[in-house]
Length: 475
Image: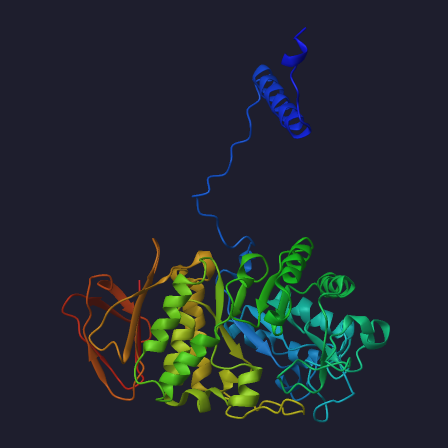
C-alpha cells in the first residue's frame, strides 16, 4: 500500500479517459487474437461518382416525343392518340411524354377547358381524354410498339379546388395574410402552392407517383418545375419508384444536383437560348453555344442526359413556333439537337411543319400533313439509333471541338468511340462559308450521311457550306 501522500487520485474526466483507453486497448488485443482486422478507411482522395442512380437500359439511344393529348388528334382522346403510335414508331420515337392526364380544376380556371397543369385530383383521369382503362390501353399499345410512356406530373401546386384543399388545408403554402397563394412572382392565378415541409404531403405525393406506375405500368415521369420542390423529396421518390420498376425521370429544370440521385435528364434551356440567339441574329458569333457545351462538359457530371429541343408546349404556346424562334436556322438547329450531346425532343406537330401556336386552354387540333422536317427528323433519329457514338449518357461519346477557319460562324465537332465516329460541320450563318480544319481528329474515310457518298477528309480538305448548311460524316 502506498503511503497516504503517494495515493493515486483520479479526477472524473481523467477516469473516463483512462477507461476509454483501456477498452480500446482490450479491443485491439481481442482483434489480434481473433485475427480480425479493422475495416479500411475510404481514401479521401479517390473520386466518387456523382451520379448514383441507374439509367434504364432502354434510354441509351432514346428519342423523346411530347404529346399534347388535347391537340394531338381531332378527337383529343387517348384512344385516338393510340392510332398514331405506328406512325410515331416509324418516325423513330422511343419515349412518349404525355401532358398531365389528371382532372383539371374549375375554380379560377383559365380559358374554357383550363390548364392541364392545374390538377384537381392526382388519382383521377381527365374525362376530356377518356377513362383510366383507355389510358392503360394506350400504355399497353405503346409497349407493344416498343415505346415507353412517361406522365407529366405537377407536384409544386394544385388547382384551387383540389381534393386536398378540404382534406388537408395544412399541406398548402400561405401568403403573408395567411391565405392560399399561387407561386410567387408568376402569373399562375389558377393554382396554389403546396408546402413540402409537411411530411404527410411528401408521403401522399410519393404514394400517388407509385400508384400510376403500379396501376398503369407507365415508365416514369416528366416533373413540372422540379426545382421548386425540395431535392430530398425527389431523391427519396426515385428510390421508391425504382423499387417497383426501373423508371425514367425528366426534370423541368436546369441543375446538376438533380442528376445525382433523382433525375435521368434535365432541360437544356441554355442550349435553346444560345441557338435561338444565333439563329435570329441577336448573337454575332457562336460564343453562347461554345459556353453551353463548355459548362455541360465541366460543370455537369458525366453519365447524365440533357434534353435538347426546338419546341415544347410552353415554347409553342407562349413564345412562338420553331419557325418563329429559329427562322432559317431551323434545320441546322434540328441537326445539332440530334447529333450533339443530349436527348432530342420533338413536340407533336413539328414533324408536320406545324406553323401555328397551339391554343393552350382550348381545343385547337394539329393539322397533319407531310413536311420535309419530318423526313429530316426521321433520318437523324435513324442515325442516332444505329451509331453508338451518338448514344445518351455513359453509352455515348462526348463532343470534341474541331477548330475551323470560321469559328464565329461554323460549328464543327467529332463524337467517337472504339466502334463509331461522327464528324459534324454546321454553318450557323446566312452567308456561304468555305472552311478548313486544324488538328487531325477529323481526318479519315467517311460516308457523307445526307449525300450517301464515300469521302476522304485530309489535311487539305475544304468544305463549302451553303447559308445555314450542314454536313454530317459517318464511319
